[in-house]
Image (cartoon, rainbow, N blue to C red):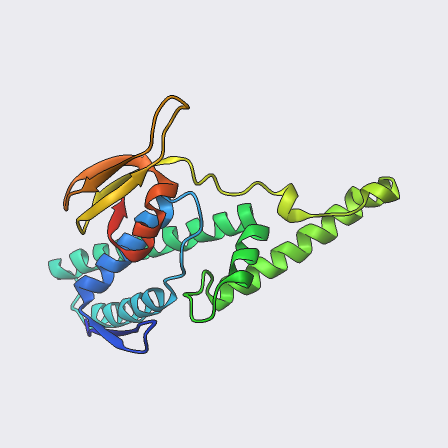
Length: 218
């Protein structure tokens, strides 16, 4: 497989080998799978993986039938396609579940900040929002008194539970991580997270570390 260029947020390019690319996809997949909220879009990784899959399948077509290596490569292609499909499906499920909050976060993100949604996901979220609003007005709201017909989907749809607990593995040592108390009679305290260590922690506490790549959800 050929290597792939990923454009970074600071207008540089990172050259990734095929193995590094698949590793990035698997990391994004696990983070998305276990995070309670929708994470930053990894559309560049997705596009590069699709490009590499096309390249791999093209190579497979040139291999002689019955070649044992072809079966192994076919299994790897199928595995990568599964991971990619699962990653995209996880994201769509969160968009459907939290669509008003997702759109609000995308709308309020700062200039130059990474996009939460790919262009296709943004179009899907907007259409899902419009269709949900139209359906609720047609089926329920028009039958209610005028003073109850206002619809605020941000209030009606629950937000992601950022206080849920997640398992994580530390990729880069972190110092002085503030841990909030679990009960009223406890006090907040700080901990150091050693590289390679695994923990069960409140997602809200380590959310910035997931975004930066310092920890991996597992």
